[in-house]
Structure formats: C-alpha cells, structure tokens
Image (tube, rainbow, N blue to C red; front, side, top):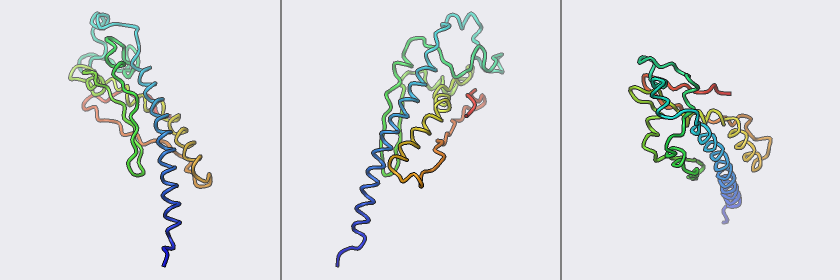
Length: 179
C-alpha cells in the first residue's frame, strides 16, 4: 500500500528548502546592513589617541570622573590604526535545520575591550548599537522575504528581532533607544 502522506512530506520538504534559501538570502542582506552600520559607528575621525590623552581620557568610567555620552555617544568609536574596521568580516551566514544565523567577526585585539569596557574605560558597544540602529530595516527585510514565500494571510506582522544585550558588568553601555 502506498504511503498516503508521501506527497505531503515531499511538498513540505520542498517548501522548507525554499524557505531556508529565501531566509538565508534575506539574512545575508540584513547582516550586510548591520555590518555597514558597524563600519559607520567605528569610523569617527574627529580626534586621535593623543587628543584623548590631552582631554584627560573622556571615555573613562564614571567613578574615575568620566561622563557617559561625553564628548559624544559612547558607541561611536574613532578610527585609529584601522585594525578594527579592517578586521570586521563580511557576514558569514549559515543555515542549520530551520534556523539561519549570521556572524560578523573582528580579530582586532581591542574589540573585546571596546565592547565590554575595561576597569578604566566605559563600554563602547558599537555592535549592539548597530543592531539597534538597523533593527527596523532588518525586520522589514525579513518580513518581506517571509511574505515572498508564504501566503500573506499567514505572515507575522512583527519580525522585530530579539536583542540580547551583553552584560557590561559594573558599567552598563550607553546604547541608542530602540525604535
């Protein structure tokens, strides 16, 4: 006797493959937008390390006299050697089962210090700021891709990504407001 669900399983498998392919392309597109935002947030050139020293290291932690958001939002980082921007990788997108993820890496030695802060410097979390700044664009990209594959009556209205902000310890990072 023939399997009565064989055609259903075949159609389901085809749909899942199509959906994962579509969402992989959308994730790649969205991740490039996030990376571009990271590049923008790490490319300020209005002062050098020598200037910062003359200014008394304005990014120091508040209990050492630093003022959060002074001289500009903490998540705006200045280009010094070019190692941070030069190291931000193109997004690596991978699909596993029904999940699609994107990773952007930076091998620059000071990346972790910027993101998490140090005992004397506030966190300069440009990565989370980039995710927040691009959140609506990413959500729209994912919703559009989802709608291209699904019957629009079954499309979720809210594709807002879940953002798990990393713990910055005793000195929380200054981040943009979520839209």
